[in-house]
Image: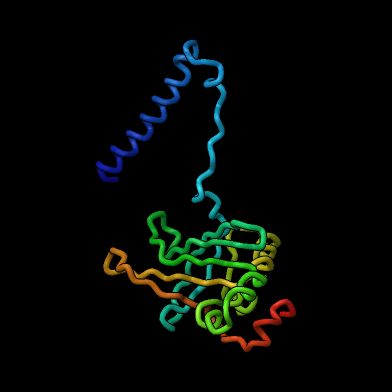
Length: 190
């Protein structure tokens, strides 16, 4: 571990213990209202704990598989996934996927745009390339069944040797095929 990281970790540990000592050390001088523990609001970064593995098409080439860490943000469902190139703790965030219920996308996204940028998760999951990890088989099936009711859009970020280049593209699901107008409108029968 580098000296800089070690020093930062040491400061964090020291600050934690100093805060604990201060909160316990001067209880006699604190008003009663301050003695109660205030609940800490969760950050938006918490909850990305559904782990999915799937390849994507980037610039027409199959790449990955990519590790998706997903979080449900609304019950429609609306889901967001942070996508990494590995499970290493220092892995790069290389993609982000937005997942929305078909009833939302199909009523708001024109077919031509959908065919270019979106994909149907029922088709992607049926292709056998998607794996829900870290869950018992019955719970993994529940996740796959829920996601099969959605469409997804993936933003891919490009990196130079080590740094992001500022360029991005829309990646696509492996096996995506453009839909006809009738297929697009008849999503509930699929």
